[in-house]
Length: 326
Image 1 (cartoon, rainbow, N blue to C red):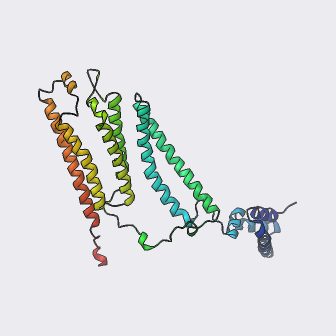
Image 2 (tube, rainbow, N blue to C red):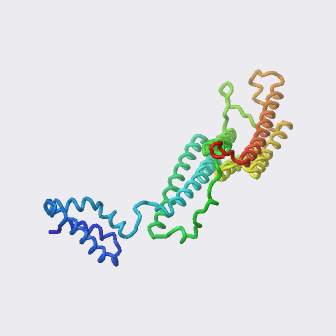
Image 3 (cartoon, rainbow, N blue to C red):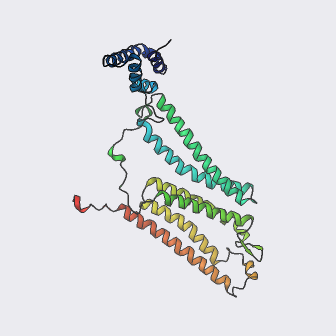
């Protein structure tokens, strides 16, 4: 009958390469024998001493990993930060884009099911996030298991140049980025919903607010701009701070939206005023509705442009040195 020591050694050796087993077995058995004999001389019975020694050695698989230098975690310390950074980056970029893309595709294929499109988009985003976590982790786990190191992958060693900038209040947060992407998805959903139905009802009848001709070019143009805005928000978050280059890109996006919309409003090509026949908002209702809309677009656009340059200016200023370290 096998002793506890025989069973322990067997369990430890089975996860050790064949060529190393002989030396490790002799060393392990010798260590166990010495410790057991020492305990027996101290007054314990052989069975009690053997059990106590093996208990102190712990799980044989963990001991085997120590002998071979194999780390017992999914992603070892050498590649852990690379795995974590890549996973976060892919999740921040791909998950929101999959959400927006799913809405656009579903609404194009099934325009009569807006609620289903939103539900499917949420499911798609969650599925994408799960798959990213699984496959990226699996690839890194395989790399780590094979003993590949960062230098083998051509990754540069860490240096002070990799240190991030000191965070400022004006820096973009993950919450800001998520809110921006969700808001973009919401506006795209509103436009697509208006295309196939209506968000407003008067006296039980759907109200068409936007002119149908806009779908020949301008509304698809606006949707593309919104998708670019979502992508810009993600890139800005990954960069971690505003710069004048980002402020310039933000200005181009804002003007690309603001100028055409103001022109369309001034030439009365936005609203379908037929719904005014069912309400009593006054004879000049179309005038003040268009005026308020134009003013809102102008104020938001100018504020957005100015805010980008202000944040870039603040981010470029040197950080204040606390009085106690001057």
